[in-house]
Image (cartoon, rainbow, N blue to C red; front, side, top):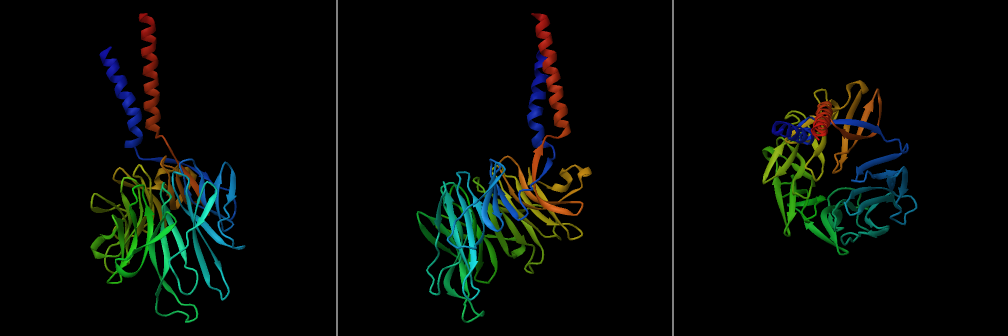
Length: 374
């Protein structure tokens, strides 16, 4: 009886351990919500966020809701960041007199929208973009400053943009690494901010901002770099050039003070676009023929998502956008020349089913033995 219990325990443990050890497998669902819908984010409830007919919108329960965040009659915009507490960060832009494009950033929560404003600007409204928001409703992004850039139309001058953090109705300039521009791209629950900033050598570098200080995260072989996201565990993702030429850039994960190449290939460019609270990272890169392919990185291994789908379905995953904490991936994929946005849902591997069936069979066997003994 002791042997049976030991075997049963091993099988039960195997059932729960198998999904973590086996290569992931996904089912594909096409998202035919509308011809001009562009969904770029998915939350843990499965709600999609982005734009519909070029308007800021989200899609839930089979219905699309357009969020009216500005007073412009003809804005173009989208939701660019969400939090697990229901915050939506977005931006909208429109063309003013003289064909000047103006952009504004917004925060929406519980149906109430706040215009984030921008840094003081002598020539009119600042251009503000939102890129990240955490559960406290703190927004990060970039906004134009009064620092005028050389060149351009003298009647419509250009200005440098700086990374900002917005909280308690105030926008704070995060500065740069010694250059003229910067942009904050992600923030976690602890308020740690990541992004990209120009240094004194006019090179863009990934940065981390914490305890009131911006620090350079470095890069591969002194190349340019960019940090695109951070999760609550403090794991950072991004992209760095392989050398000073910036010709080939590789996706990276930064943890415990070290930057690690995700392993797509040193001669082919790749980028990491999202990370969830489980530490799963998604991105995309160019294959040997130069075609873009989506991937997932987990447990220290990178997997091209095409290989995790049923080969008979002929799907090619071209790009990835968002992954939630259940492992659902929002992506672009093509099948027989027709492309569109899809949802990739994890499913158990065949060997997992076999172990489950074996475990259930053993449970039934043990139950019958106990019944006979009684």
